[in-house]
Length: 358
Image (cartoon, rainbow, N blue to C red; front, side):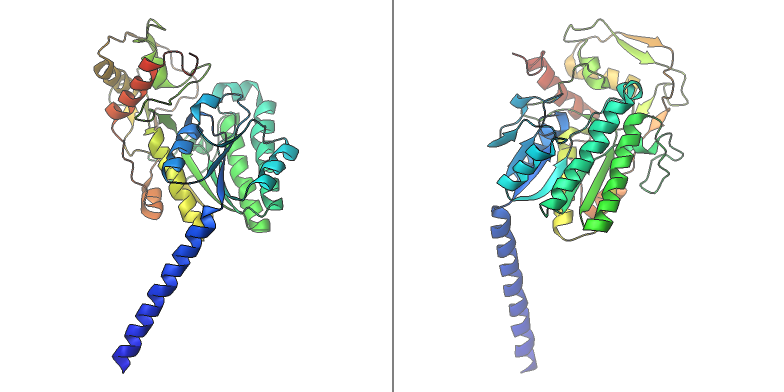
């Protein structure tokens, strides 16, 4: 009799779990994920990844730096998130379950010259977004932050509990956005995951979308401009750092691995977990010279380099530990070799030398 009761309860639990999963599936089938800045570099790759996971995706982007051709979705809204009236209409039109937030200005040098624009677009933009989310009872947000929030690192690799003391306006605005989410969580119950990382690189394996900035400031696409015939050489800013070859070491992450991390962060929130912050890194940094040599092998082209003086404020080594993300989110980078990152980037740039301009 006792055995029969135990078996009955086991079967009962299985039935309850089955119908719970079925309910979630049906419920989510009518819900959408809003991706702000979804036409940008990382945003467009995240849109593609979410669509591959059978998510219903809505994109909002003002196309200040994004490209409409980079996303293939049924619902695309060319609006600025600071336009609360238009943003609210998007929330009223669709049943939005969660937000993946990329929309922001992100050039470190420019941020030092235009702090007003960065605070207005990034911080005020976040305020508008959270306000509209709260008014429409949307209580999950995954935020694309930056490891620039840490400033000059005191420990390598950088961990989530390390001091945050940004050394530029861009990092300061991203940190302010994180703190804003913390207080909106306490007041309104909006749960968030903030993902901090350094250098997104590479492109989707298909070569259909990739990195396209104007001006370009990222090392790998700048290096690839040499074999493309767009520049004669690449500059190395300092070769006297305390590293194995004297050049700066940085953390490079394949953009599709970043996309998967944003999806896992949403799944984490869907399970009812508390707000959290995670670093994303590949675990191994690469020096500027290593990146150049790898690019030579991948492209089969010579890439002349010239050493110039150090740039002020460039730390010797920047590597973020992703142990927490791997442990809690179950994040497993698939494309963590430098050759793979550059090969995918090269495929995109070689086939689209002018980016999205045909």
